[in-house]
Figure 1: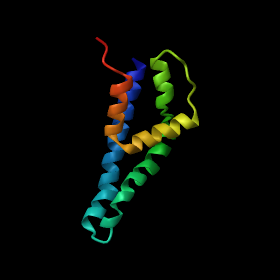
Figure 2: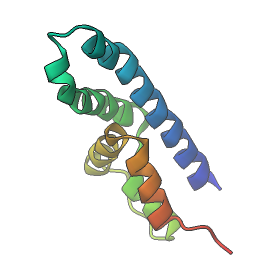
Figure 3: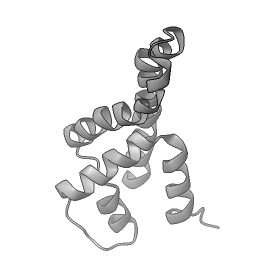
Figure 4: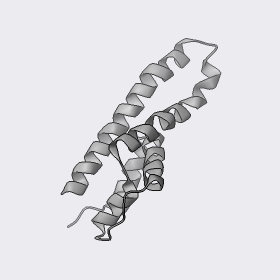
Length: 106
């Protein structure tokens, strides 16, 4: 059950990062015409925010998947960076990941 609690926290952090990046960086890019061509940078801003947060909370989706599959994998910086990239990519990406690797049990 701890695995799903951690996944829930990761989802919450993903939504918060996406919302704050859109609010603090995306809104000015929509409102200031000179910044509009640089809206593509938002995904990199989200990644720049999400990787340090992943390190702070030690989010490692690979280790979490290993726990779910009953194969212990130690939390590593590589897993944390990959998790930060996934979190920065947004909630849609994490939803696809969870649906694929954590299917509903019948």
